[in-house]
Length: 266
Ligand code: BTN
Image (cartoon, rainbow, N blue to C red):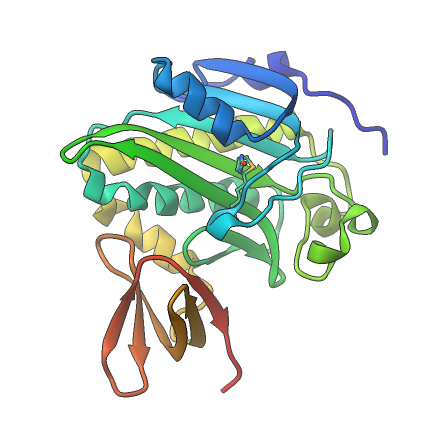
């Protein structure tokens, strides 16, 4: 496969999104698109600007993990958002992005993508994409949110490092053909723009059913791993704040705000 650099004109041509994708900052290499987007936001960049990199030297995942970011094959980008709602609902943006991502992915493959709380997109049980949101808030308002997304597009199984080879997949592996990164990014920005608009105008209640419908662990036994310990229970879905609800064996419902959720055998 010949890996070509991004053609941003192709992304922008036909992009009908209203608020997102107003301007693209393109780099061959960055430490992390989230870090660069945060710098731009701190300097006053408006909502909707997108930072795209062909490769990241310090791509970041959730819970301090690394995001494998080899050049020319995948998508690594971050969007600056300046939502007009209160900081308490900021976590809903991550869930909104997961819904938009599954919509975009579903337009390219026939197998339905599944969400693993809060933000992993899985196909055939393997990770295809992830979302990392980072916010800057005062007590009563959100200053900005950086919405960072990584998608394994044309990454070959043989090119994956050992650390992710058994757990990750790519559109190339699923479709068995190359996907245009430009087409995928355009579609994804369109879906993000649409879902972001729904969240702002109608609230999380209008997004939650789509998230629940794609949540792969509904009713399943899971192990929840948090910084201060772990427990097992049954995944029940999410509440209005986007927290995961897990029913413990004693019937108590635990709200999970940060952690990892792993399915376990019965
Ligand atoms: C996760 O699943 O843990 C989240 C992964 C998010 C990766 C993306 S790639 C673009 C953006 N820049 C980063 O450093 N991370 C996000």
